[in-house]
Length: 188
Length: 350
Image 1: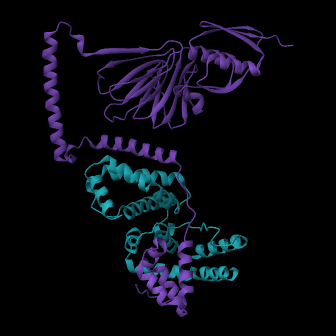
Image 2 (image 1 turned 90 degrees about the horizontal axis):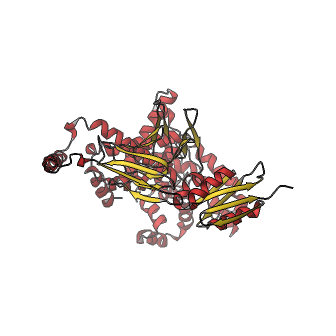
Image 3 (image 1 turned 90 degrees about the vertical axis):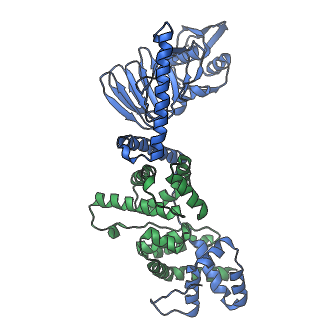
């Protein structure tokens, strides 16, 4: 991110096809993975990604400059997916559609084997109790490792609101990790 | 460190600290990358907070989520679709010239001058020479039994011509179309060119391409099979019926005169171009036809062939006699090879 993103983006704007390809291969997996969290429909995600990149190239002259490409692509994909979903389900608001599917894939060394099944399913239940927006913040912060400013850009709200969503999410999940830590300390 | 306000519930000091740590951008980065004197110092100055700090670290490190990886062929497939969409969209918008940036217009002007000059030169040149049909050159390439041919067209398109096949085309390509005529079988790897579609005429079937790789098999009397490996193509027959193929699909234009779609097996259909000979539950006449084409021999069959004769095998760089030995291993037969004549004798079934 930062400088190299800005250079790549500028090359794209001036019509450098190699830069376009680089952006595609760098972000395709991230985008697909993010898109699938909103819907189980793989084809819909594929189509939206295709539209996104087609437009990125065809309308490159209208792009502004940026020094971080990822949030720009994420928000653009999200908008397309939610728009498609709202057409499909004839639903009124984006917020109602915004399901965000998130489940832990916890490694064995973090949770001991015999307890793994129980605790992971309990942890996932707690994760499911969060609001979709809280799950999205968690995903963007820890999985995509975006900054709070970038998350605000993707979620189209003020940074302050992101801090709040994050605080509430961590507050709800905290118990899982404090007891887990104690459990592991006991085993030692 | 940033102070986060949390108005939800009353928390213990430790819980509050835990929340702050997990949310703190510099702490998170330190957990991921481990390079920060600031946090090392903080921990050594606050030994009583070590447990809380460990829990916070654990939470951050546990924030791994199930994700779905996109297989490589899907990534390429989506990319190809994007390329095709771009071609179509740019085609549509190229009529509105106002969008062109000035340097494109200048480049086009230069090109125009160059081409006008060369046309004038060409006309002059032609008028000076006696023949006036010089402008079009017909090129024809063909293969005999046992031969394969790799060729490149001037646009960069690669064609592998299978044995007993013929390809012909006129150069330069006219009317903004790249047209080739195929008899027999060939594998095409077409270079993308949005302004000049690539067309293959094979028997009653026309295949139109944007940029892609595919196989066409056109054996006289047996119809035409077009198998698509990547990209997208349209297949049209004499009656102007047409289908659009996706990778992995094959269009068959048989005796019914209709185009039928089916899946195909890559090894069976395409691997010939890489020198791999495949029999996939093949009957005797399929085997004979393939061996004759592959090794440039003629095969004579005698004896009584079992009614339900089928054979499956894959050969890479084998001699004809090795293959015949292989078949003889599972089927009751004797064979002899003399020059380019092969005799296969099936033993009577007892």
